[in-house]
Image 1 (cartoon, helix red, strand yellow):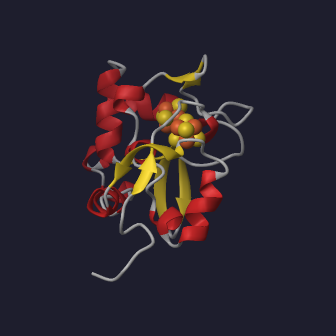
Image 2 (cartoon, rainbow, N blue to C red):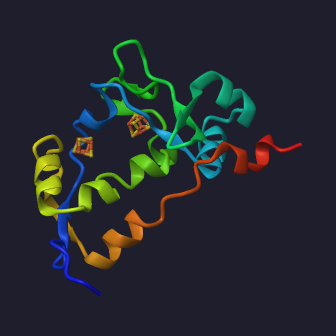
Length: 150
Ligand code: SF4
Ligand code: SF4
């Protein structure tokens, strides 16, 4: 196992500031499991949920589903300074900030720390925990989703 800047772990605890749910435009990709979890949480039909709260984006040579944003680019589920689907939030949100790009070197992590006040506080995540989160990214390719197959 080669050495990483996070060999001794990294500290993180979300403050709930909402910065990563608001601001500049972005995508929140959904796996099929995310769609099932969120639509169950909202007690909605899966296809109804997809139609109402998501759109399709072509990125990295594949079609993915992303959550819609409001006109000010806040996430569609960010209201009154909180996430309305928090217990069922997508993997992309649950795995933040332990994304591969943010872990590529110390500079990337420190840069992120200037945007996310949760970095550098709270409990220490071990290297194993961090890598488990970072390398468990689900399949986002729509054409692999069973729900769209006849
Ligand atoms: S920016 Fe960081 S601290 Fe703020 S809500 Fe997002 S993860 Fe939590
Ligand atoms: S789903 Fe929830 S946690 Fe994820 S971006 Fe939207 S408001 Fe934030």
